[in-house]
Amino acid sequence: VTAPLRLGRPPGQGERTREAVLRIAVDVASAEGLEGLTIGRLAAAAELSKSGLFARFGSKQELQLATVEAARHIFVDEVVKPALAVERGLARLAALYERWLAYAEARVFRGGCFFAAAAAEFDGRPGPVRDRVAAANREWLTALERAVREAQSAGHLDGKLEPAQLVFEVNALVMAANQHFQLYGDRHAFKRARAAIAARLDHARKAAATKRS
Amino acid sequence: VTAPLRLGRPPGQGERTREAVLRIAVDVASAEGLEGLTIGRLAAAAELSKSGLFARFGSKQELQLATVEAARHIFVDEVVKPALAVERGLARLAALYERWLAYAEARVFRGGCFFAAAAAEFDGRPGPVRDRVAAANREWLTALERAVREAQSAGHLDGKLEPAQLVFEVNALVMAANQHFQLYGDRHAFKRARAAIAARLDHARKAAATKRS
Image (cartoon, rainbow over all chains, first blue to last red; front, side, top):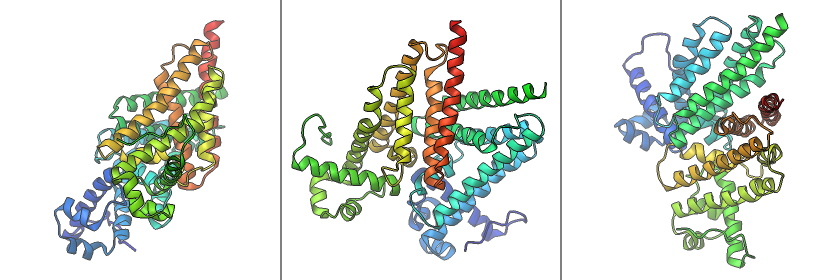
């Protein structure tokens, strides 16, 4: 229903405005929730007229869906794409979760990870917004699983490990770091997540080394 | 500001009504968010008059705070107290996270764990509600940390482990199970969390055994 951001070609004036407005929408939603992101709230935050935003987005739900899509593009550009430039295997897997942790730690958005907030907010509210949020979260887990399988093929990780299990654990730790930082202002949580993931991967690596010898 | 539920003595009629209404409030808030829990929304869900609920709770914020307190009491009664009846050490630690997982898995509340939802919702919204949610979450982490220290004293777990680190990891895994179940309907996530925690504790146990020998 909502036109995707066309990131492949240089954006025109209207698209630049749209991107800028949606970046503000992601920021507001990360802290105050996606359900609280009304056209009126966004108009106040972006210092634009309500009528202009109504013309642009049509309805609150379209605004919510466009915001999820914008957050997804930002996440892909900032976390996923740079990690895909790193060599396949353990290095790429590490780049994926490291970039995610660094992004959460830098608090690019006021409320931390947009998707962590949106997932918790919409998991009990069936509908198109929840479906889009769930699909975007799945994409992230799928990218991690692919990286685990590549690390297994490269002999970096134990081939007997179930990728989905390892990804469940790694994702749990990075999400918990974001949550602790947001809720308690506890920056040390990122260190805890890194230590736990390193120990987990070290264990999976040793098993691979034992198998080879 | 809000009178706590007096669970120690038999409740009178008014208190029973209050408990029943707040249980509905916890259920609504677990799925639709604590910010969406207006007096009007609760009146509709509980089939009571708005004026009666206004007389009882005074304001939306007082209702929110009373709901957090009610959720805390339910959590203590259902998860923490039964685990404290189990022998100190690894068995009590296991009882704590097992009861939590079973509770989330039984979907006692429509939106899963109330505190997981409320923490994600309020972590970016400073104020008394966020402070109460954060304090209740801290209580849970503190109970887990105490159980880890007791398991260390009993020689069940490596004494060199930092309790806060182990608790960060265990809590991350149980929260992730709740999240996966809520977002994807994936009941298998509870099995993943159990397997990961068992492996983590097994590792911490082996280190303790090695030290003793």
